[in-house]
Image 1: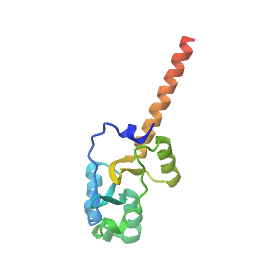
Image 2: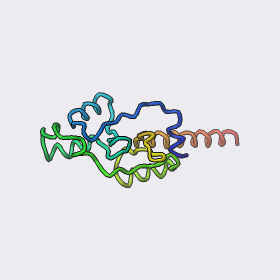
Image 3: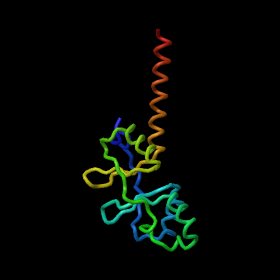
Image 4: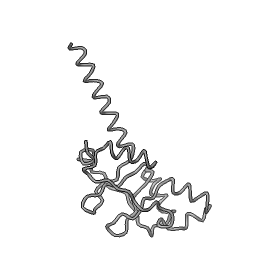
Length: 142
């Protein structure tokens, strides 16, 4: 299965910010939306990802003055992306290998979605459950 199939039919608004957004405002957005990360845009282009991990790492270095910085000063960049035709298992392996939990999905230079490792793990668990059910049915019918 591909990322395109995974995100097909999703109509959730992609929460985003710009590099000029204050860390204080970006943290409020993460908290208000109950999310762990969001893409950072410069016009129509993704230029970074702002995450809880960015806040934690920078908070240790900068203390409370971090909140007065801009997202562009603390975000993770450059951005690694996947395309809609990327197999789900490849995206999952990439996230596991690189130790991050969010990936922008980019098609023809435009961001079309933002997936989390939770989205991919849920897909894999659904597949395992489906395969197990198919095996149980096969064994019962044999």
